[in-house]
Image (cartoon, rainbow, N blue to C red; front, top):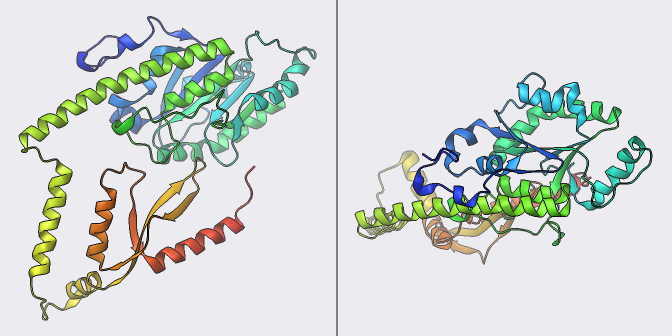
Amino acid sequence: SCPRCRRPPRVCYCADLPPAPLRALATHVLVLQHRHEQRRRAAISSVPIIAHVLVPTTVVAVDDAGVGPGSSEALDRLLFDGAAAAFERVFVLFPDAAAKTLNAELLAGIDAKTLADSRGGGGRGTEEAPPSTLLVVLDGTWTEAKKVLFHSRPHFDALAGQRRSLGRTFEFVCLDLSDAESATPLPNIYGDLRREPMEGCMATLEAVALALKALETKDSGERLYAALLAGFRGMVTRQQELVASGRQRALEQHGGVSKRDAVLQRRKRQLEQSASEPDAQDRGGADDASRSEQRRVREYVFVNTLVDFRHRKQLVQQGPSVRCTYDEARDKCQELNVGRARGQRLAMMPFDTFCQQQQQQQREEYTSPADA
């Protein structure tokens, strides 16, 4: 394997990395990486690229129990010990309901509130280095990241109080994807290699790159942003080429038929065979009840679930409803999902169930508190 990226030569992406890691002017990136991400998804994880491109970067493996004082020496040194107060700002990058948008307006407000007093009221010139910042990023699936944050939240809240009493900043932040000049929304660089659970999601590296554009000076932010994305695209391209060659070999071994097409063909044959069999009147019991329900004609709808970046979900009907049996609705749903990426696929449900869930969503919207 390559001594730098530790990958086999055919998927080595070192040619797309800078000769030596680039140093951020004032930002230290701390990645809390879930152990499952570290073990099971190492081949396509974006976190190693961050460490190869950017210094200073610290990666700490965590689990569902979260983090707190004493959980690791690196975390104590950067977050929980008294020396951690050397960072003027600590930002936890996670889009929960209380997160503030990381943009120039937020940073200017923080500077005006906390830095002017500590520097005798003097302002910071546009070319001066920004204040020292610790950027905390959670790496894992959405479920894993939310578990880590949930169990770490009491320690983070206590730390926030301690830092604010010292005139230091601690904030939960989310990216500003509305400002095209400072944070242009990116297409999913992973492509089919790793599909995101909802539209607008991005890899950990992409989130770090965009955050650095806001936290660093313009020149430094642009330089780090370009280097991070170049390394990431290099890794993805080589991994996609490897996957494509494997798929081609599999097609050649199975007569040119993909696994998905083979499953659909087998299911179609099973349905045709089932339709040709005469109804059995003596089967009885649960099996008979199940068959009766599947042959019942009722109204079905096809829906997908839209999730915004704060994890609010909404069912949206796609196309007209249909009156058919359960098996017919399932076949129709499979046809509609051909070519759809994960996160964009449709589900089927009875129309009355869909109406009930819509009413429940409306009640929750009326009773939920307004966003901060």
